[in-house]
Image (cartoon, rainbow, N blue to C red; front, side, top):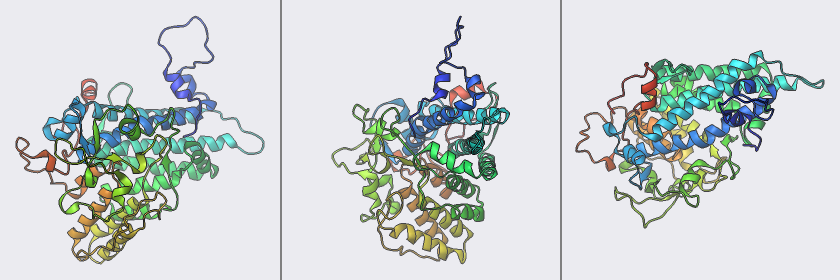
Length: 457
């Protein structure tokens, strides 16, 4: 993310008291959204907010729910998440922060779309540069509306798809949430196609490595597979250029890699850490020769958490304050294609296994992010649909470690996993996920009369 004066955050800092003079250095939020020159700062501010605060929560809570990370403290937030089940309540600060941050990010995108069409962007004689900017900003705002709605649908049973300043936002099923996110992504493509220069403009603004079109297709694949639209998911994943990287970037100063900031940075509280073997157990444990173990973890064998599991330090995409975090990984797209084919069954299983082997056998350092298993081809029963699906899940869990996705993917593959659990007697340390969905934050329940009842767990 490029260093720039973020006008959005300046506008948010305005005091509510009246002033007897006009302060030209401190503009109101409404004025900022009506000022074309402010939009670069608004977009970068929205990006910074997501890439730091929101993304940290997307990593933190789902990683504890899916046992990717272990609790090392007595803090209520982490303790509730690893207790899971009915013990996890809407008072949890990590969940309320994630809910609030995602709605804040979407709210900024909604304001961009509410104001920008009425603006007169100046143009220069050489080219309509600001028209290019306008189309880029609109596409990026639709992308953010889709992405934030998609993350809400990953973790909550019912979601909002539009913000409401009167605390009266309507809730829909998570399936409807994914469908709405796909509509937002399609609209982003419409905006980009309307002006060929918009794509390059927004890519250059957001990060030193970013491809908005590929991000759109990748997120669409992610949401289509959740909806069970297998051919659509395959086609969207197949449209992603796997030779390009799209990342959230950090300058190491005011914009720090969020997981590094809360785990490895000097002075960080020792509250949670990744678990040995990427937190996987039983027949899902990574092969000892799987090179992805060392990519994602710095092994430390002299610490253990209260589940008597060894814990480690994060490596991979979190080992420094400037390490970029992928928006998606190329192998996620291969695995979405493999899953789509496996779920179609029959003759499609052969292609699913071919894609599994592409992921497993990939040499470390050979993809654009350096992730590679370096393993031999899979030796399971290629004609057994469930075995193929189990292997796909295992590779999802390894490849997408600490990306906030193991929790919803495990639920998609094993929807009945928590059925008939006796929460008073179960060994929580042995569970591969601790909830089906998250409870709604108490603040949402207190302020929005439409807030649904919490799921059982």
